[in-house]
Length: 137
Image: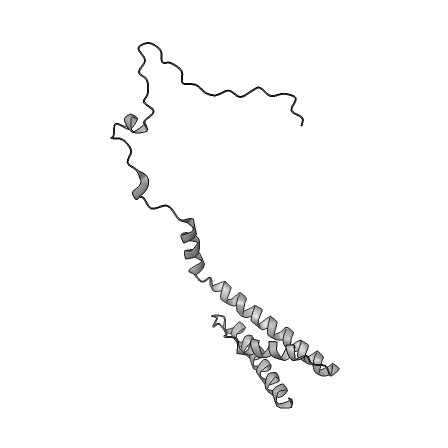
């Protein structure tokens, strides 16, 4: 859409009141019948950042499950890399370091007993494989 021309903007001027008409002083407080407005210097500003930080402090029960599942997936992926490395005869030390780090990482307790059991099995397998690899080294 093309704009051909535009009207020039003009400043708004105070218009003179009609004879006999009372002019407004522009003060909102006079319309309310109260005294002049007080300064807002003593009021505390609303802080949306504080509210967001408070919300982040609340733990979502699904967040713990999600982190636990993610840790289990990382352990399984690393165990798969160990398996491939053992079959090919080339097991990088970085994979062993990652496995050791994941095993040593603190686990979260979760309320789902089925998921907890699966994660316990994965963790046990990772610990056994790490111990076997450390004995060979």
